[in-house]
Image 1 (tube, rainbow, N blue to C red):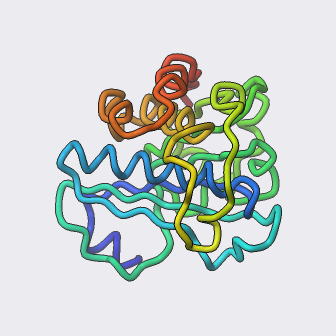
Image 2: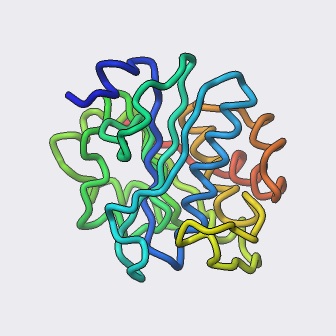
Image 3: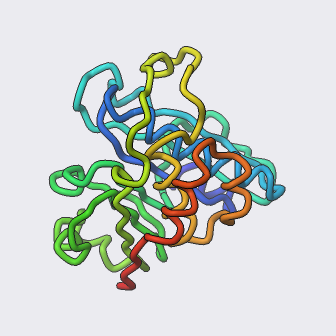
Length: 211
């Protein structure tokens, strides 16, 4: 049992899987948008990247995190989400060969950025013993909805990010995650994200399959 489970029992955790450097911005935006939207709804929040996973390595699977709670978050010094309520996979190939469901809570929701049939990806979810904990799997073609945005990589190494929050793919992914899980509302996401069209389209277009 981690400290977060014992102390922050009401906290919801979002883990966003992505690939180092080239896609890190979109994962970071997804986590940041959900956390900031939660703040507007009166929730306490945290959001950060996982430097344990070597984010400076191009293509390496890495994670970004968000945490939301109706109460002050006590576990500020746990730098990983060990028991996610929501898992977002920002690039579809990460579903195969990565334990994206590791530690997930009962009722977990998985959101995958893909244009494939979601039923064809469900079989790759692992660890297999945790699939029974998943309430729903959702698919969104966020790459299409948030396309055409030029990103700097300034924020990748912990520096200031010159690209506005939620300008591209991350806006659609955050909206899909919110719609599938109910963790925040559409209205608050629209107030935060730069690309409001992508937020609305992500919310409307996400396909959710109950397990």
